[in-house]
Image 1 (tube, rainbow, N blue to C red):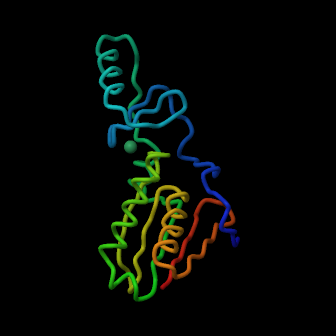
Image 2: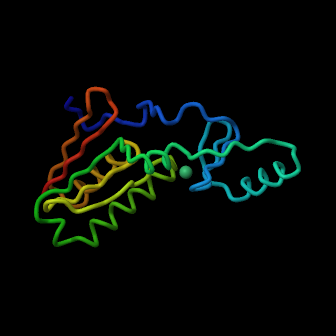
Length: 165
Ligand SMILES: [Zn+2]
């Protein structure tokens, strides 16, 4: 289904995010699930571990939705960077994409880049959630012009973004 620019993707239900108990610590990236939110907090992590050691609480240890998506290779966003421009501005483009990941993670730490790879002259970026793919498409267009298109799958589980210049 074609989508309009202003539509957002953070409302899409992530089936990986259900069924976590409080508190859960992700053994892979140390993200904490507490009070219905995922976040990094070293101090709280230490506090929870101390309490668990004393037997005061039980900690659930399970990979967070982002680490599961990375391990199972199940992206909700794919960005294809096409054309000749990116090949001549490789470092800049890589930095822009990594910066968008950092910015997205300030809002939601479950936004991750699963992988970036070159394939048949295109740069393919896979993201855990669609919001990050959307951000990257917007940022590329804003910074370097060109044209971004967005396409959400019928089941709303995969956002495909293409940017060409
Ligand atoms: Zn994790």
